[in-house]
Length: 439
Image 1 (tube, helix red, strand yellow):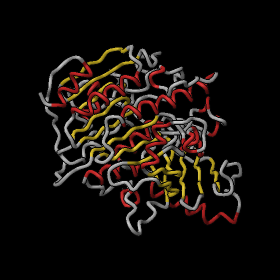
Image 2 (tube, helix red, strand yellow):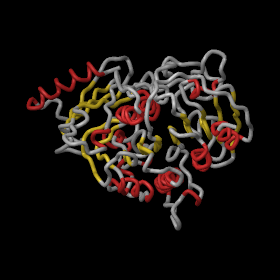
Image 3 (cartoon, one colour):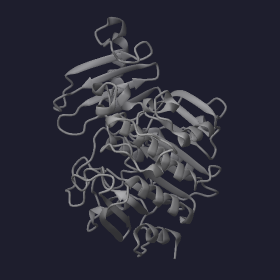
């Protein structure tokens, strides 16, 4: 039995193997293993590693061996960031219905649009463990439960089509729709195992038996609502869950680090490039200022943790350069020997290797959300510390207001400088760049 089939048997207790139907580019020579772990609803400011309250020993240890980015940006909501991660392109929209049986929505990513994993060299085996959240878009005749397979993954283990609380409706971390799938086969049933434990177990059990080179996208729902006290097995010894929703949220962030610890226990950093990144900022109901959190392009909504280590990375460094989640996909492709042509993302490999004379990855970044008929919050961010927010509150495609901030002197974004004539030319530059960058 091939190792991939063995993994599916392990995670699903059923066994039918079908070889993946996908063509990829070829690559000669040794290839790195790749791990992309996505933290759900965790801002950089939530972590002790970035001056926040929650210690994450596994992530802190990884950062000590790798590169920690202080100006990593994501979109302010989950699905647009996940699309940007896997396409290497600016995305501001979300996705259509994610639960099986939903119709294909125009926002759902088209087949062939994801460069990860489809553009990896043919030698790679690509697996997704955990949350998909990119809608139902299977090939003709395929069930919805195989949407990630239709988009290029070889298998999906301990999968949740969307947030655990949404599928099934009213679900939670111990009552969630679990999907395990590969080409031609899937199982789907409500699971009583804590979702993050199931995801961690799928990776810890499966990684050693999947042939190298491998890509694992690991995406437990933590720390997305519903807020709860996670099982002690995911928390550091002696961890005490604090009071209220914020206390439970912080415990969930700590538990997400427990998932990372499990992943790192089976990964060889000498041959594996590991990326840990957040998908958006702090949920508003547990943020210091709810109106400047997840769902907005204020800093608490879009500045996320990003740590990259292993393989060729020259570690022990903190980098303040502006980067974006679109650069993660480009970096993974570049590390695997794939082509990054046509992407908005820029490979960070020269910086990660500390190549002589490496240049700043980017001057500009685009963040925002146009998910739904009444959601229009788009911002351009420049490496000089300026930001222009363009707001379309009614979703009619017309910007009603502009907000311009100098983050160097005003990191809390309190003073709107859009009417200050001394910043007029900079505002025009932001408007011009955004017009050319918008998808």
